[in-house]
Image (cartoon, rainbow, N blue to C red; front, top):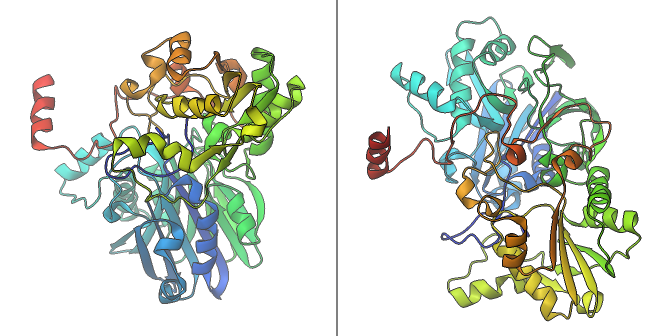
Length: 493
């Protein structure tokens, strides 16, 4: 379960969160304008996809200026910084949460690469399953890496192909034969803006129309923030090129079976986004409806954990006829730097960020709904708050199946050891977190929540069955190990 999307400080992982990797944005205008500000507003809308670092690169007649740093969008950018980027006709933006590499500024994006055929800026969302092998091959051929993320591997592959190709889009198309895994890319060359999505379509990417050009983004909510019109999703395997005021499509990698991450609907995407033809808000309500059909509970009130549990709770309420109630108030002024230096303060931290409305739950049988249980620690604290507020019974319903397997495609579930569902049965989890009953949405149910979606789904984190071949494990720090850890790995090998 997660409450506030933040990264742990000083080794404290208060909310046992899951994170997606990144949000990407690109804009192409037919005339020179303030594209940096457009990128800023779009990244603000995509902030939920990553809060570790962010950056914007602006293309002014082939000269690319970039500013990036660790922090939230309003921390990294202000009016002076945006003005220093200058005007141009293209920009690329990125907000990051690291599923590979650490959260330092060196791993912030966009990446800017300069080579003999020009300059390229790249923003990436996803995770490559063959990144370690590719990086090893590149290093053996003399490549020098400055970061510890997959995105630099992608930039090397594209640059290598660009040196042998007549155009940047052809270089991207050739690189896609080498890249395996999840990648939604935005690539900016001196004259072109390109969006590319892996053939499985693991992560979202869409196209919008501005007043004088086009835009690409992880989610349609970014277009709303800049007054652009959502046109369509980039298809799995598709390369879309904006050049000379026009869009064109390259489809040499299209036609395979799509495997969109279903958890984008459950939690990652913003409720006001439309993904693969389906409203995320409606999909989450449908998850709640299906959850009730699978697990009807006699209760007096249904509440959701802010924010991702609210829509599913509303759907559960409407399907069951049990009244929907506002059970928690979320403190939205506690930022990512809120830390607890002592154990006693850690125990009380949940009270600072979430507070129960006692009138909603006192002397009532409560159905509590959230999107997932990861490690179980936060669940227990929240259930304790409900008990102390006078809840007579607490029944926990989860709008996704149990996490039992690592994700290799851009979510930081990198070890079964961290997942409570791998260590305990459902009754044992219920006892541990202190609820009267615990219920999960089935795998079949979660695949039905996005009715009418233009895609298939990846549910590997629930089933262990993945749409492509995956390694045995992909630790978050796969590109950086202490000397003692390297020796241990060699001994194990």
